[in-house]
Image (cartoon, rainbow, N blue to C red):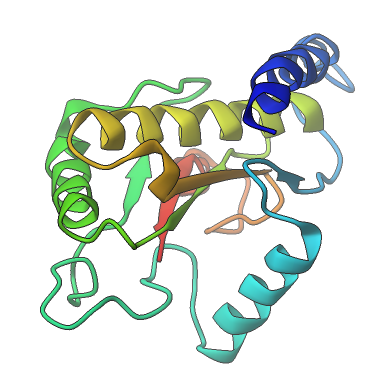
Length: 184
């Protein structure tokens, strides 16, 4: 199954990126986007995650789920959101402590599995934003793995522009929407 994913995933990403190089009207804006699943997260699982988050009153960037007692991962104030520059999947150095803390937690709790939710602002086509959200989530997963977590502990999913953290059509809103959320 893993071999099939490693073969099919690059092809699917290529299919998503190529049409995403154009914009709908030349302004870089696009119409609505739908979520894309990766790493075995089915639509039913995503719906269940959404229902749990809504029931808990969560907003983007909040801790979701329960971490084992004594963990830093579930402490209030613990950052679990990584923000990105426009049209970039490069993790900024200022987020290294966030990723190190999460990687240390994952290394000491090998049974824990997290979801890395990749997001983009509304600029760009639907396909491009889904691919960008995926690249961002994979970049965070690579760093978590390099710093002590295992690859199997982090699933990735891209929502593109589908789930904005901030409404608005200005740079302030765009900055909040270009992110990866670490969800327990």
